[in-house]
Structure formats: structure tokens, C-alpha cells
Image 1 (cartoon, rainbow, N blue to C red):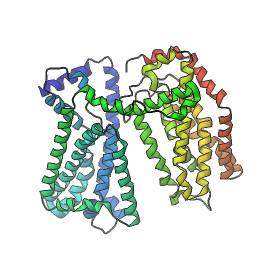
Image 2: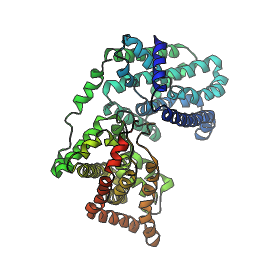
Image 3: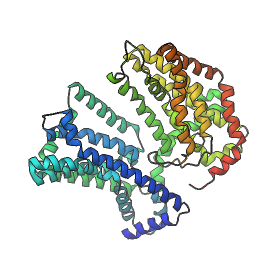
Image 4: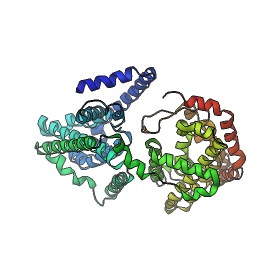
Length: 496
């Protein structure tokens, strides 16, 4: 029966009307995955050389063991965004006269067959052969790499349970991310090395099989936890009920003051928090607010006095407008499933577009407020963010929306954001140019003629003028949607 289920899934893909498109997409994705995995292998081969440069003369094995926990915390984060839940296929299988246990076993096995499951092996196996084997022998190398592998696979099963149990809850993710940041910061400052918690386990695995057996037991326990949870909740209403209740009445009261456009902004907000792909974009926007920590105090970007490096313009644009820059690229694709509803309403299209504008401005302002603590690095960063915010919502927002209206494509909101190219077309690649070049087209001439602060003020003034001319600028995009509304509606009816 297990192999029969595998065969049914194969026939389903083979007989799909979008089979040719899926094959081409899978070939492209396979090529990209091979490139990424080759980078992982290359990093694994060069790991000893990197440690030679970073920490010459130290015990490389002990050093790597002490920082191993950061690798697994990082794995937890990227699995959270990339790893797919195996519940999508339940709808087509639960009605069959087959035990739920066998269906869940098949789905869990399919989720395990993934490039993510071999990253730890590809990264640490070369180091194990080159360094660990030379010092502790073949047995020590095998138990060490196996312990690392079982830890990685434990995270795989735990993540399947975690994401479904907490319905993409931000609480657990922010806790892990906070531990990652604070742990790395404390290690850098010499206060406390978080890796010392797990270091004895991997050190002991070099001379004893006990850690290997213990981690194997933990992995089996994680699998059983995942398996039992999915079997006990293998009902379509159970898998979606919690999310429906949780987000049913979420809205932003301030938007209601803006009439029908405000109601559309609230509707768009509910769309964002109810669907996985849009919710991922919102979470990534929160993470990218920390982008300035990488550059603002980096000595490589330091300038004389308290000046602003030209590269900080991009960072400021990115921080204050990250959600708008990502979400607006697929401007109408988010509403592809119900675009005809707005088309049939009086002023529906106009209110939908204005509501999106209102939402982008509101979220960008919240991102600006969240970035105010960067003023601790210097008052110039507050000025930078103010000017970049004005340019984002005054000029750049209109440019991105204008490009996004060129042949928009349909999209399924229930799929994840990572490695999902639904709704993406040539326009999404072309709009990268104005995103990068438009701010510098204003900033650079004034910077060269005067100084960086005059260039920054010019950027802010142009953005402020765009805000004053918001109504005619937004009307350009509204008229464009109205003139192409039937063509857009037709394209959204195409099968994904």
C-alpha cells in the first residue's frame, strides 16, 4: 500500500495539465539546488583552511564543537521558512479506504527526501575525513558525523511538528532568533559562549557511541511526536480550524477612518495574516529591520567624521520599505483568486488599489518607528531613515506598482514563499533597476556637487514632493488597472 500511494502521487503529477510547466520548473529548481549544494560541499572542503585563518594554532575540532549549536539554530531558522508541511496532499487522500497511519508515513517520508536532509553531511563530512579521522580514527569520525546528522534530522521532524502545532507562530521563532543573536553577541564580546552547552556532547561522541545512541533516540522520539500529532489531527477541518479562529477578526482600526479604501486596507491586512506566503513576507520584513546592524557600525563602511557612506542609502531604503518593496512587486497577484469580485463592484478596483497604497504607507511608517533605535549609532541615521521613508512612500512605491501591473500572473496564497515563483514574471526582475537606481539618481548628483547631507536632503525633498502629489501619481496606476482590468481578470483565470 505504501508504494501504491507513491505511485498515485506520481500519476497525479504526470497527468496534470501543467505537467510540462512543472517539469521545466523542476529542472530549473534542480539546477539551482545543485549549485547551492556544490557551494555547501566547497565550504566543507575549505572548512579546515577557514579555521586556519580564523583561529590559527587552536584545536579545530574543539572549536567547531563549541560553535556547533549556532549551525543548528541557523538550520532551525532556514527550515522554518523553506521546509514544506506534508498536509497539502491530505485532501486528495483522506477519502480513500486506507489507514491514516500509512498515508501519514508516506507523506512524512516524502518530506524527508529533500536536499535539506543532506546539508549537514555535505558540510561536515570532508572535515571529518580530513581532521577528525586523523586524530580519533575512523570510528571517532563516524560517530561524530553521525551524531551531527541525527541532530539535523531531529530538527527536521521537530520542525514538521512545530510549524503545524503552532500554525507558523512567531513566538517560538523569535525566541530562537533572539537566542541566536544574543548568543553570537555574547560570544563575540567574550561574555559567554552559548556553544558550551552542546560542546560536551560532540566532544564525547569522538570517543564513545553513547551520544550517537542518545541522539538516535531523540530523533526517533521527534519522529513519533510528529507522526502521532499528524495522525490524531488528520482531518481537514482540524488542520485549518485553529488558523481560521485565530485571525477571523484581526483588523487595524485606524484604517477605518479612510472610508472604503480603509476597509480594503483592512481586508488586505487580513489576507496577509491569514495566508502562509504573505505572512512569510511580513515576518521577513521584521527580520530585515536588523539589516543595519551589519553595516552601520562596520569599519569597512566608516567615513570621515560622522558622514554617511553612500551605500547606507540602499540600507535605509531597504529597512524603511522592506515590506512594501517585497509585497508590492506582486501587487494584484495577491488578489488573483477574487479579482472578479472587485471587478463587479462599483469603485471596487479603485478602492482596492487605494487600500493597498494605504497599507504600504502604514507598514512603512511602522518599519521606520521600529528603526528609530538606530539613532543610538548617531543622529545621522535618523535623518537617513526619515529621508528614505519619504522617498519610499513618495516615489519608489509608485514606480514598483507601475512595473508590477505589467502582465500580472495568478498565485496560490496557501503555498510557502521560499522557492515559490508563482506570480513572478519578467516585470519582477525589471523593477529591480528602479529599486536600486532611482534613489541614487537623486542622491549622487547632489552628493558630488555638495556633500552627502545635501544629497540626502534632496532625496527626502523629492520624496516629500511625491507625497504632496500622491493623488495624481496614484491615479496613474489606478487608471492603468482600470484600462486593463479585463485582460488582468482573464490572466488570473489561467490554471497555475
